[in-house]
Structures are given as structure tokens and as C-alpha cells.
Length: 90
Image 1: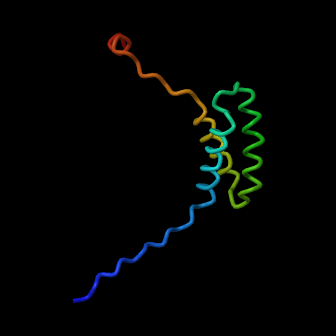
Image 2 (image 1 turned 135 degrees about the horizontal axis):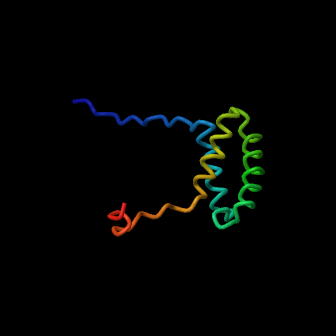
Image 3 (image 1 turned 180 degrees about the vertical axis):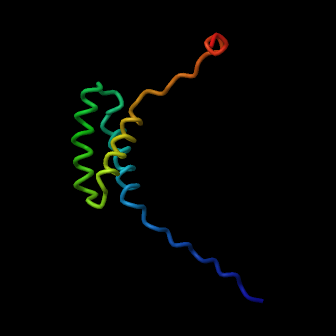
């Protein structure tokens, strides 16, 4: 009988976009951007997206714009579900 050898799967390194996205989300949470006013959030995103663009030079302008969109959506308050009274009135 032969022994079944367990082989470890090699883990691929995350893509630069994935790394930048994860780093941006961590910064949002650590810096308290969620509680900031909208104009302060805009300034913060200008600075942070500029930094991420320099740090991850592999990213295209489209990917950088997508990072900002993801970050701004992340900072929006959650949408409330309509109550049963509102749903039945519609």
C-alpha cells in the first residue's frame, strides 16, 4: 500500500487591485472616515486615492477610479428596509 501524500496548494499572491482595495478599506475603518462629514470624506478620498495610486503604480486610471467608487459606497449609510406598512401602501 502506498501512502497518500497530502500536497499543499500554492497560494497565489493577491492582485495589486485587491491589495489596494483591502488597504483602502482598512484605512477607512482606522481613520474614522465613516463618521466624517461629506466634505471631509471627499478631501480624505482625494489624498488617499492619490497615495494608493503612487503606492500601487501597476493600477490603471480606471482601476483607481473604481477604488474610489468602492470606498465612497462603503462609506454610505446602509439603506433601511421599508416597514410592512410602507410596503403595503406602495
